[in-house]
Image (cartoon, rainbow, N blue to C red; front, side, top):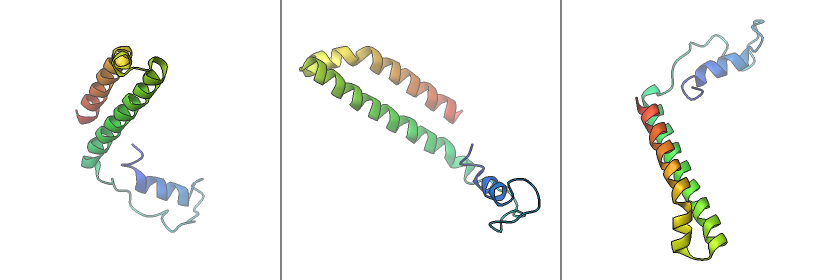
Amino acid sequence: MLMISWSFVLSTLSDPFNWGWDLFGTAGAPWWQVLPEGIPWVQTLCALVGFALALRTSSRVWRAATGEMSRALFGMLPSATLLFALTLGLIWFFTN
């Protein structure tokens, strides 16, 4: 929501108490939405990057604990499945 409402944040910071200040020269500026159609793509990208980083961290932890890649993959399977389901749910939520 903050990404869409960025222009509103700038005007609010220019007059934070609504006392007629114009600190940054943006208090009377009209409010507009910044690329609202692009926000689901950014959110989806963030969810996928988070999923990839979580898998990488899980793999490192399991490899350090077990010492073998096959045992590490088997150990991280439940959490990776949950992460995958959560990521799909987030992507579905963001794009619908």
